[in-house]
Length: 296
Image (tube, rainbow, N blue to C red; front, side, top):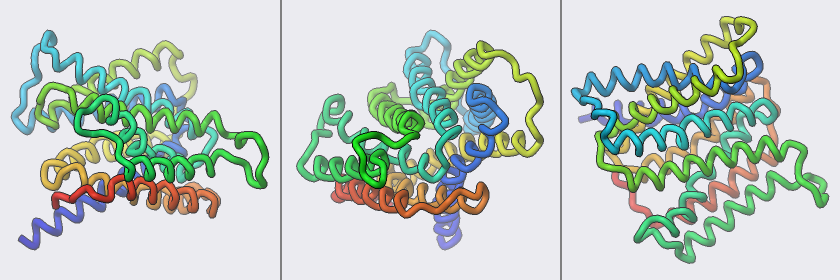
């Protein structure tokens, strides 16, 4: 029993590290590999990992005419290909810590979208107040200091990361409506679609003219296998064991891990403004989810 509990907590720590350092790895990789090819290679390697895992679990892929392919292909494009590209493009300008905070507002977008598209997920006063507090944290990130009536210079890149969070929120809504499918098989189908789409887009931009340094290729391999492949398997397993409420709480730790990793490995500057915004946004998400009961 103690060994199982230790493995459970080890999986929780591992998934926070995988997700938190993903932005650090992307921040390093985009200096030498274009966002299009970064996403194409990332999703292709991860697709092989998830396909192998699904087959190892004894699952069989449905025929192509099965409606599940349409659902999970859409989820792969919206929930992986697009947000991965937006993130890589945005991180050419902004650092990994800020990226993780902006991407971490996904639950706030989900709350609003669920009100319109999911029955029994209506907005309440508590959810509305939590959303407004979190939104205030976003405004704090976009307004220059000292105050001026203009956006910060990196607002376009920050906007791309917010699009990433919005894509993840849309994915959550679609997933609630998708046909019932074993989680590992559905994830593999998503990555197949994401890899196919991303590879076609990358080819349309032309082949890379130079070979990236070995360090960037190693970082990309770690990103694909760890943060995209193994982390997805751990995510599915933790959801099966303890439910989505545990994942929602682990998400709060991701920006902290990302900020620390960015400072240590990329030499990013520590910013009290970023920390304050993270606290405000996290407080908003906590208030919005305060009555959710963990299933551990």
